[in-house]
Amino acid sequence: MSDQNFFFHNSDDGWRDLGAGNRRRVLLHTAELMVVEFAFEKGAVGAAHNHPHVQSSYVAEGRFEVTVGGHSDILSAGDSFIVPSNLVHGVRALEAGRLIDSFTPHRADFLE
Image (tube, rainbow, N blue to C red; front, side):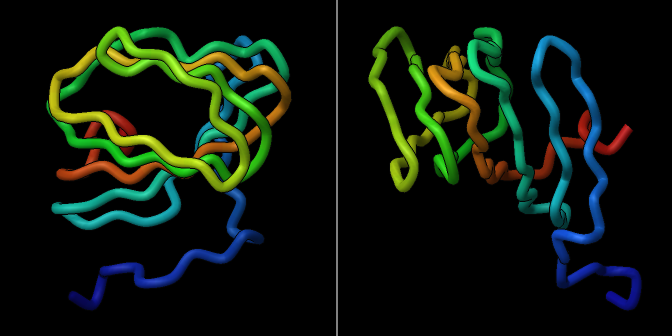
């Protein structure tokens, strides 16, 4: 476990520009769990998609229209949502904001 990173500091940066007003940075990960921060400009969209990972998301800042499995809701800072494996989901930023997502197992595609 000597290579395992147990801590993340905001000064570590690591942002990756995804285009269309979206950025992400992997905060920490193990084989079993990954924590990722996403930043959205107002009006930016996290397009509908699915993946085999279970996802839990916390709205750290802003307001989002969130759709999970065909059900939509408006979530604000302090709210959260969960996405079961393979369920289609997406978000639209109603104002600039950030989501903190946890995935299990980790998203290997985010490490490439």
